[in-house]
Length: 233
Image (cartoon, rainbow, N blue to C red; front, side, top):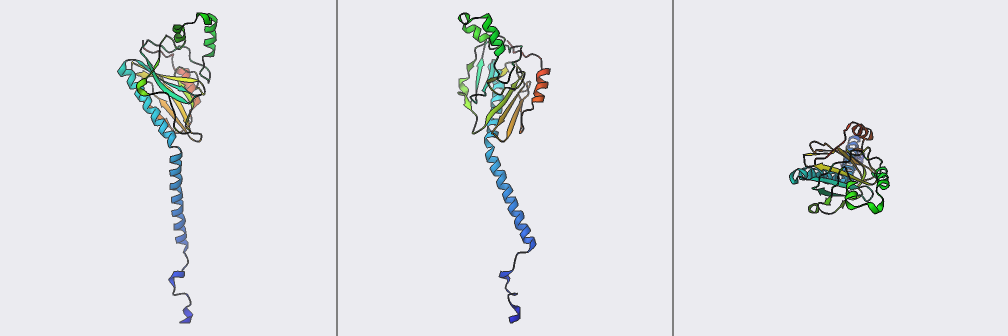
């Protein structure tokens, strides 16, 4: 009986290689699930902001048709807020595309300063400088005040059809016309780690979201190919 030693005690049996491998596999799976969950929570604000903007674009597209007026989304890349406004006045997008990443019409405004000194300026002229024709845009009160994006999400680049290149500062406008079309547009959002790009089809108002940065080469091709844009009067 002494010769048996501890051989008959199953409680002291060591783990086999197969058991160790199964245990490691389970740990790896659990770690992977945990990392996916953390990643999903980390970038949830980016996806939520993308969905909110997509909804706002669709809303403006439909509202312009239903209300028979021109809607637009304003995006302030310096203050990092966006808002919705409209006009019932005739309006045409300026034929000359805006230049510069800041979105400021510096050259055009300097020329206007030469033609109209400050003492000769009036409200109608200021409105006329906004686009091809004077138009008074007012906030769409039903849709609330300007709003920021969620969490750490920010606008990094915005391009619309009347811009020559994407803006990284200043204010960009995306117009929706009563005839059932809008400008082509690309909006890049980021939370510092990941990107989400929203691409807008002008004839359908359909938005496609892609988890990648904006392609400036593609934007340049679109800007070169697109004819001057004009809204309906």
